[in-house]
Structure formats: C-alpha cells, structure tokens
Length: 328
Image (cartoon, rainbow, N blue to C red; front, top):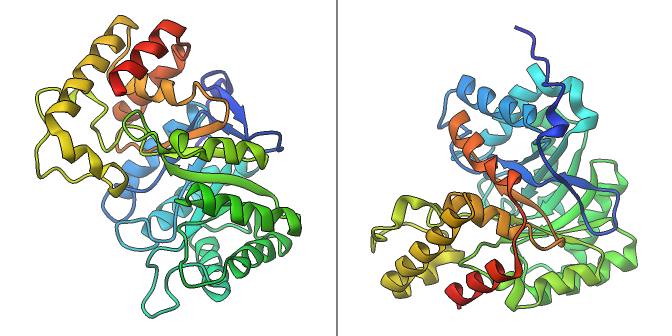
C-alpha cells in the first residue's frame, strides 16, 4: 500500500523557529535513540514513524551509534524514508550525530576531521540521503583541538552534505568557544542538543540558554522525561538500581526526596488536566530558546499520549512559581 501523509498534519503540531535562523522545527522531534534499530521489527518502526509524520512531526533525530547496534537506527530510518517518506524530503528535517563509538579502532569515535567526514558519509549511505539538515558533533573531544572540529563541520556544509551544524552535550563554556569559531568561519551553527528536563536544569543554571541566545542559536532538549521518572510510573518509589542517563544520575542521591517532588508535580499536572509527562514536556517549551523536544516512541499509543501536551502549553505565573518551589 502506497503511503500518503495526512493532509491536516501541519494543523496538529506547533512549530518553532530556531533563534533568528531559517530553520523551523516541530515542538516535538522524533528520536530514534532506543527501540527502533535492530531491536524492533521494521513494520512496527515504520508504523510509528509514519504516524509521527501524520501528526506534524517532520523532524527525525538520529546518530551514528544509535541502534542498539551501531548504525541500525539510521538503517531503519533509511528503509522507511526510501519506501514512504522520500516524496516528502523537502518537508523533512533529518538530523544525525557522530562522536560516540561508531566502528573499531582509534578513529571510530570523537571529533577529528577524518572521523566526522567518514561518519557522515556512512550516515548518508544508511539513510539513503544526499544531505542531512543538521549534523551534530555528538560530544566534546578532549584530545582534538577545537578548531579542527569546527573546520571539519564547516567543510561538510561547504560540500553540501549538511545544511546546518550543531553540537551535543557541550558545556556552556565549550559551546561559547566553538560558536566563536563558527562565527569567524561563517558556519551556519544551529545550537546544542543536551539533556534538559524538570529535574535536570543545568541548561538554565549554567547559562547555556543565555549563551546560545547570544550566538543566534537554540537548544534542542533530549531526555525530557528523565528516562520515565517524569511520568506516573515512579510515584510510589524509585528503585535504587534504576538505570538512568548519566545526566540524571544525581537523582539517586535523594530518592525519597525525588519521589516527593514527583508526587507534588503530579498533583499540579492533574489540576491542569494533564498527566505528569505531558506537563513536563509543555514546561520545557515555556522558553522560546528551546527549539524542540526530542522524544521517541515504540508504539502509536505511546506517541499519541506524548504529544497530547500540545493542546495545553500555557502556564500561569502562579503555576511556574509552584513548579520552581517544588523543584528547588
């Protein structure tokens, strides 16, 4: 059966400009980090990805090491793109990243010129693309001088293999340093993709949002639900051995206190007529400098539940004050 996208798709999702650039992203981007590589049947992944596009999610976020086996998430995307989404290429924002372990040997990770050039070439092959819309350096490289990384990303833009570049998991200071080089090179720098959620507010407290704004860039937030903590799943308690992303590991320092916060947030969400996860995602987008939220889904029900928050994204000053008081 030939796929035809829902004609009302752009009426179902808010869109946000990245600072004052020409890039526009949906409030929610579809992340292929987990569960859509070689871990799930292709038919399931295709079903969820197409439902995402039918609901106005036109941005698909990937990385060379996503899978769980390296490259398989990009292969999954490529299969769906080639079969169904290819006619919509001009509508899609397709992003990928390179820097974590991708292939054997010392050149299979980090952000040297040879590594970044080879990684993007492999990503394009796997996804059946001529170019990506945004290519991110996935992590800070402590061994390669920053100018080489910046110039490698700039080269890929000039070669037409990426329209914009970004960084991911860079600190505020690291972001400022590479942004200055990009400005010198006239490289179209779009922003930083980092962990940001109600429990992990480093993007605010370290000045990262301010720094990105000063450089005409935005923030793309991954981990908006802190690996499921910001749902109703752990209101009765957080297991001490729960696996959380390294950026949220501090939560384990005070499990009982975290549970108390989750319950108070859940009560406030209920007053707003939302689930906790819906309020958590809406809260992230209260700041215009947050360009999009990256979240994945392994089923249509999961996807549709996540995006319900778009019908209630406004917060009163009182509600924002209550949230700050709870999280303090």
